[in-house]
Image 1 (cartoon, one colour):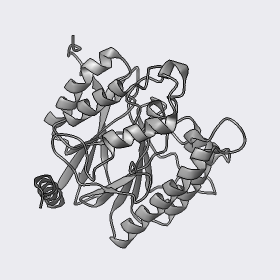
Image 2 (cartoon, helix red, strand yellow; image 1 turned 180 degrees about the horizontal axis):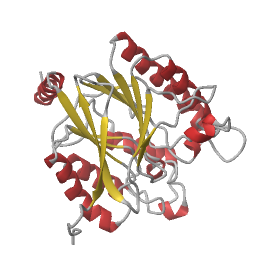
Image 3 (spheres, rainbow, N blue to C red; image 1 turned 135 degrees about the vertical axis):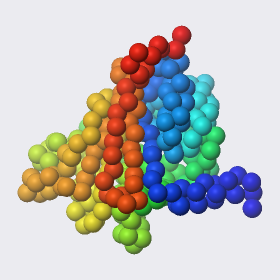
Length: 310
């Protein structure tokens, strides 16, 4: 067995035997030079706070900034330097929006392939410690999953900007190619969670898919099928369903899903990460004794009284 694979196995066993787990959630960061200077300190503080792993739900640069290789490689080095396992989900600022002139007028699919080569080419997380990941077979390796205690964590390539649906009434070719894989992975992961009688499933994506509009019957075209499927799967699942996203830069924890009668779906919780210009992170805590009750705490950065990085 290769040394890195042995390390993955050891980490997996160590987590499986724990009584509680903590994870850190970030997104839409860094968007500025100041945030780029601050982020290493924030990641170190998260590790000092004993999180077992960190999840970044996409947009690792400002939407107006260039999508050059140097930026991508800088972010990879930054994430690899984290002292705990680091899981990254791609956002629209890293690929679908890269065709903008201000971004360098790149081909979005070429940029997505670059992201795959840097961030999603191995069955493991980023970070100084690695977490074993199972990637979806086929052309979308950014779709992955991993189990921590009683919860299954799932990554999905669901970017902001209406999921790259396009500006006309007809869906773009890219959306039509990717969306079936997103939905298939979503259904497969719920089936696995049911089969193994897991206490919960956590879905990690970049876009705010518009839960409020969906509940009102006005779902965005790029997210309608995803939200229909998610609601159906959630109602048929006895455990807790958690969706973590960024995109609209509003740190919150709430229950925005409604059934077709307009009633709150009680086993569903949404967490949105901090986002520019407000920097910070959200912690989640899981206890084996009550795994469906996940506690969330918000941590603005820099902490009160602390000085920003020079």
